[in-house]
Image (cartoon, rainbow, N blue to C red):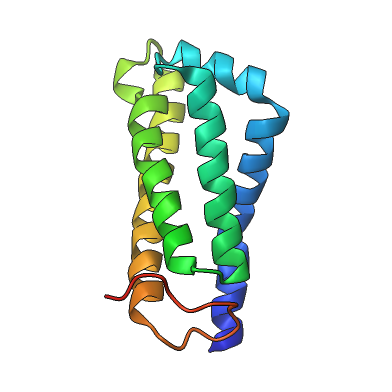
Amino acid sequence: MDIVVLIGRVLFVVLFVSSAIGHFSQTEAMTGYARSQGVPAPRIGVLASGVLMGLGALSILLGVWADLGALLLFIMLLPTAFFMHRFWAADDPQTEQNEMIQFNKDLALAGASLMLFAFFAHTEELGLTLTGPLFHL
């Protein structure tokens, strides 16, 4: 089971690691997009979400307080869905559909992150991790 959980952790964080890198390598472009979506303090938001994604993903990947890492991803994903992917405010059908897909993706990943938080915080013997959980449910 340990190897299955490890493979799942690796696959789960690929998106977040690449996105975190993008937040720092394409900060200006992402800030412009966040500004166009009406996000207050868009540059700070881009950098903060990049930090949360990077720390959360590395925590889960390395198994260092993976429960905290999953919680960080949840904390980043939920507001991102509502601030960045406001499909209900889109002007054309294609933009509406694209934003709805991104909104639903963020909600699904937030739900998965919350489940991972509970799993990591509840299970004492995670195997193939560097630390145990920070929280205990």
